[in-house]
Image (cartoon, rainbow, N blue to C red):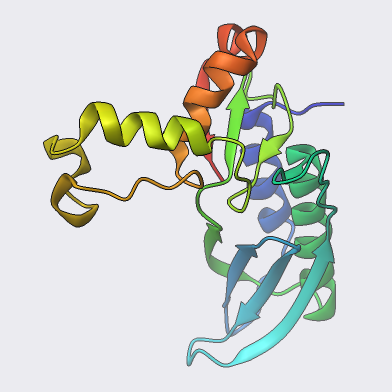
Length: 182
């Protein structure tokens, strides 16, 4: 079943609260990548104490398309965190940092649930939308980060993918309260 965003955060906080106190707290790093999510614990000097990873699937439903199920990210993160905590014998966790890939776009409903598969960074289905954005907005200050507003605008960027969703999946667009990146 889908877990709302607030319940997801509560679950992570609860998982960290289950850690017992030791004399030397550790720091938890979580890295969500294209093929897996990794959880690692580091000591106060930055040395690796333990690491655990969990893979997830990438689907290629059409040429140039790449998708993942965001629920699999969440499930894999839970497994990775539980695994690394177990490997380190339930340490005290003093802090946590999470990072992920960029340009993987997800449409979320009002409860934080994914409404469709995530469109991965490598997905090229929004090539026409990228071209359209550059043609219509060339020189606009909003594009200044891309060669002074002259481009390029890549199909892997969030905005072309969001426009693709709006045009090609209007039912998803209409239900979405948030379009975000992973």
